[in-house]
Image 1 (cartoon, rainbow, N blue to C red):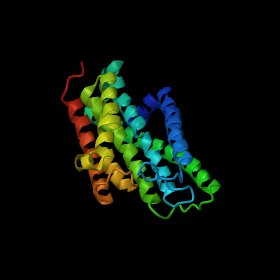
Image 2 (image 1 turned 120 degrees about the vertical axis):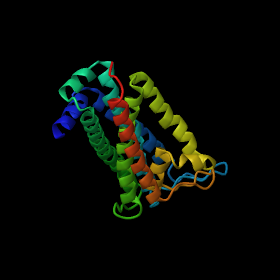
Image 3 (image 1 turned 120 degrees about the horizontal axis):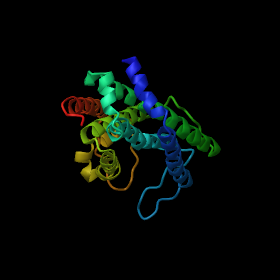
Image 4 (image 1 turned 90 degrees about the vertical axis):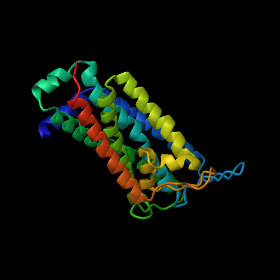
Length: 261
């Protein structure tokens, strides 16, 4: 199994896609952090609450939560890891080399976990360096072991791994790479964003992967839209584990029971 996982990782990391995704992720995160830094401590406007100041202990966890924005990129890599086999017709050779399809899917899921962990590390490092530097320049102090930062870090890892598995499951279900990418992006950026942003809709949104991840990271910032309606942190963790198992089952069943032609 180790050799199969290594082979799956080589299929991805020998291409330009992974570092292109990493560069876009850095730019995406930097843009969000720049806005957060520029607006830190701004006075409330139009009845909306302002962002915490840089020396406010609440600002650093809020900034570090931006690391979870890399979930869209691990999802894309998961989709590509699965659908590229069908797009370039390499799936036949893959299954001839390893006739037990379940082992191939298990290897892809294992590779997805590694991809999620890798992107979580680099996303947290980049976000942490920028955020901690901003806090120190702003006159604040940093306590990485205190507050909700350890829990938030765990949430970022869980979120990025989950979305990589989601991408693999979606790719196995849809197969068409363009359709899977569009569907995944619409789900992450439109559907989950709408259901997660408005407390009135969080009755449904809290049970989706995005809502569960937000609950696990436990970022509670007043947006002016009303009181958040999220699961407790342990509930978010259980929901994320359930989704990870669901995506693994979907990827396995849709691949082992369908013709590859």
